[in-house]
Length: 192
Image (tube, rainbow, N blue to C red; front, side, top):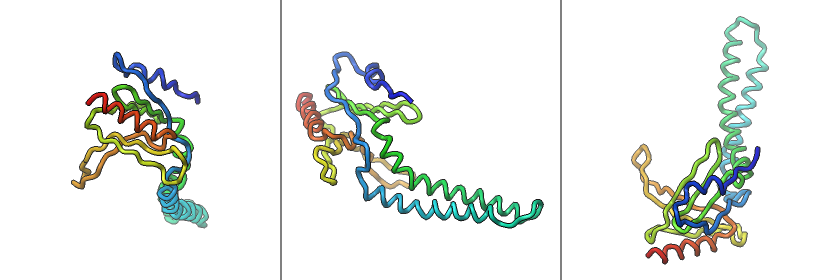
């Protein structure tokens, strides 16, 4: 698979007079190891239990044409669902940590912040930088110097049950977090 041409994908979305100030990508690797390891530990019993149940269902001594054969087949299919959920929870964080840096790009222009992603399809999210834009610098707690997250979008939302949560967007796990934070602050001061 060839790497996407991020400059060419961003160019049609820039408005006249808008110039690129910074572009980057998230650092590869585990950035919140506690959360990821907890998720992986939660998924491991599903994976192992599902695989064990699948193997036990296939090893049942059955004779074709009996009800036991149908039950073994049903049990094997049921076990695959649990094994699939377990594989997703256990292996998903590893795959995401490895590939997020190759499938995400961030760009900051004189007017907006862009998040470009290439997973199944291309997606471009645009967040205008206004004087009222809430920004937040969240340094990585692991002690890696310079790596952090710059949040520039926060909006309260309601889920299907009516509970309120905050939707956030930003440049996550970037190596030049403080520099980008100061660039956004400078843009806010220019537009004030």
